[in-house]
Length: 291
Image (cartoon, rainbow, N blue to C red; front, side, top):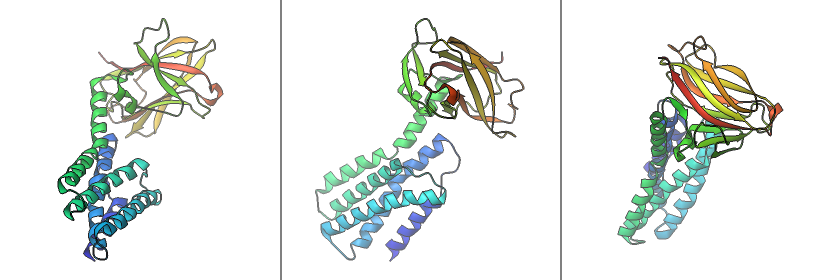
C-alpha cells in the first residue's frame, strides 16, 4: 500500500503547497511543476495497478484513473483556494503520458527506445509556462520605461482586457508608432485594459504618459488607475476628459502615492459603461524620468 499512500500524499500536497512569492514568475514555476509531479503520481498508480492487473490492462486502467484525477484535483481547488485551469489539466496529462510511455517501454509493451524518447519529448514541454514567464519578464525589462508596446508577440502577456482588443496600424496622422492597440469598449461597468506587473518601483520617475486616440466626434472620459501594494489604499486614479482624436495624458506622480513605500502591481486604463461601443486606440504608455 506504499504506492497508494504516497500518491494520496502527493495529491493532498498539490492542493495546499505553492511556490513562494507571487506574480508571473512564481505562477510559471508552479505551473511547470504540474507535468513532472503528475508523472510521479502516475508511476505510483501504475505500480499499484500492476499488483492486480498486467500488460495493457494496467496501462489502460491507470490512464483512465489519471484522467479522472487530473480533472478532480483541479476542480477541488475551487474549494481549497487554488486557481483551477484546463491548462493545468493538460500539463498533468502530459506528465501522465510520459510516465505511461516509460512504463510501456519498461514492460516491453512497445519498443523501449521509442517510448523513452517520446517520454523525454513530452517532459520537455512541461517547463513551457516558466519559459513563457521568463520571456515576458525579459520583454517587460527590455522596453523600460515603456510599460507596454505593440510590436512583439510577447506584448500580449503584458496586457489584459475586459473589452475586445486588436493590434492595428496607428490612425492616420497620429505619430505614436507603427502599431497601437484598438479597444472597443465593452458593455462592462469599467471597460478597458489592464497592464499587470509593470515596473514596480516608480521612485525614479516623475509622471506617467499615456497617449490615446478617441475615435468619432464626441469626447470621452479616460480613467487611469494605478494599483498598489504596501499602501494604505488599493489604488489611486485620475479622470481625464479626452476630445475626439489624439489625446496626450500626463499623470504627475508627485503626491499621487508614497513612491518610497508603495509598489505598483498594475495600471488600468478604462472608461465607463455609458460609452460602450466606442473605440479608442492606445499608443504610448510610459514612465517619464525625473531628470
